[in-house]
Image 1 (tube, helix red, strand yellow):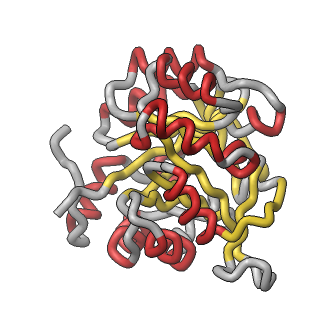
Image 2 (cartoon, helix red, strand yellow):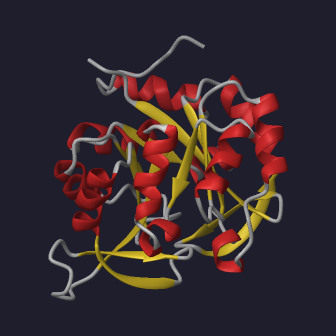
Amino acid sequence: MLNKRVIVCLDVRNGKVTKGIKFEGNVDIGDPVEMGRAYAESGVDELVFYDITASAEGRPIDLEMVRRVAAEVFIPFSVGGGIRDENDMRAVLLAGAEKVSVNSLAVRKPQIISAGAEIYGRQCVVLGMDVRRTQDPAFPSGLQVVVKGGREPTSFDAVDWARRAEDLGAGEICVNSIDADGTKEGYDLLATRLIADAVEIPVIASGGAGTPAHLAAVLKQTRAEAALVASMVHYGTYSIPQIKQELQRHGVAVRMDW
């Protein structure tokens, strides 16, 4: 049985880790490098750093932050936000990241996925997908893709977009439910299940984790291969060892050798 992964997400704004609820009301909570190092030392499997305002502000990602993280953190990490083209992807990878996450850019320019996969390998390309539930018949799955930090709706159905991204060469998809984001009431199991069932590549569940039981539910009840957490660890409610021990108790295979 393959181990499931626990991933910590660090949303970064103006050089600080920040957290909000449903993409609103963000407050700064710490330094990304210091927090990333602490999580790595505590046994987390991967980290994700999102520059959450770069795309909306039309600026590039903070490469100096990426270099600082790479110098201090010795587990895989991905970076997203402010990626504009293949050259930006290259710069992020050369700065030390293992993966590049594209979200708004991929919707606007889907060929960035195939270009990145061809040049750097599909294992380096993660599609970040922010989704929200809708009853609009234009979205057969009931899930609409939104971009620019949840501020801009698209005409993309989430399941259709996931399949297309896989065909284009995405190596992984991170599904973030805006409806659940920051609520600490559990992942959107339906959204995660629909998308994970539609593709063969790994899917990361994101948005809504509040207890280890929430991770166990999404990892056992859907085909998600990883679960992303933020608030529940950022505020010290749970530690990574506590989460992994509880996952083991629920019968979820996780890496424990740190």
